[in-house]
Image (tube, rainbow, N blue to C red; front, side, top):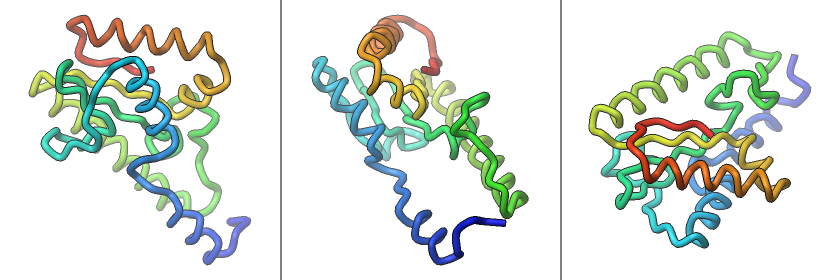
Length: 149
């Protein structure tokens, strides 16, 4: 049973946006401050990545742990009401993410997934933030085609 009324739940769900989320904006500001330039929600790239760095041929997706089912993450919980509905929705999200990743790799576009929980920790811990940014910068310079942070 849901602890919120259908009207309250509807209002909450309507407030969730798919573009320009706080974690995306935070990461974009960090990258811009380090001199990186990028496009946002590029329609010319499969999957319309949150950030596309043409110079590095790299698509960056900032994934919400809940919506994209970050394995082992406390934010990727299963709602208690309408479990079948949610499971179907999550399965479709996972399948779409995998199809987009394969399409990008087929086109030789490098893929970076940055999880929401990583962004949350980056905001709290400067040393962790610098470590993750260095990891991303190292990745941009090498020939790997996939990275999850």
